[in-house]
Image (cartoon, rainbow, N blue to C red):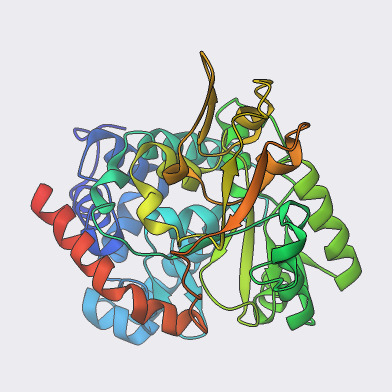
Length: 369
């Protein structure tokens, strides 16, 4: 559907989703098409009165919209059931397109013609590169968790930043039904080269119970989670998580560079500013390198390339360690990174830590437009 076919409410809602406050893209025909797919005209008219992020009660939304609560309740419930808005005990709210709505819509594994079209539309929109607008300031929201076997004996005693710490700190664990990125890639006609859509995110702490309760994943025991972690590392997936301490409730995305929108952001749209400095970074002994190219084949950020000789770019290294375990001649090892900083204690503290950088990034995006 193009602008000529869209209703006035759908056009207005497109402008809402293009807001910097919702980390949105500039208004475009692609965004109009996506909004029209998500909301019919009647739904869009009500969605215009929803708050960002923090839910508002049915009565509060009805007052904003100038409607009777019982008139709009079915519409809100229908949108919440489809997950195009958030709906819960505290009320209803709008979510950003990505990250936010993207994960929320797809994480339970739903597969229909509507979901497939949604996956295609959101992937095409993200591929326009609009996320580059928000990459103007350092805001270390995400950290990498390196593969344990890549850390040498001297550093291993610290065990800092490893999955073991998260496994030991929690009693509740879950695995989401699908990886949203690999699911949307499949919906667009592409299959992942490393893993299946069913290899969903790993969830820890109170997030795990909530995931199971909402039908987004299944609970697992600690030992099963250990086995899943080993399996995901064996598939050369990259472990990315919120930049908080291991004991905080959290989730780990096990990512591939062929499907993951976050790695797409890092590799193509300046998203390295959102990654915390890793505890370890790769170091290469070029004299030992035999130019086999295995490191380049597993590096998720193209830090290693082998064209007319081996080239390593430390600024692109996120410290995952896959190049170390893949190198058959031990020419690569991990070394402690002096720029590393401890993660925030919890998500609230992380939000406060990120606020200045995110505010400036948002202002920069607004000025660009």
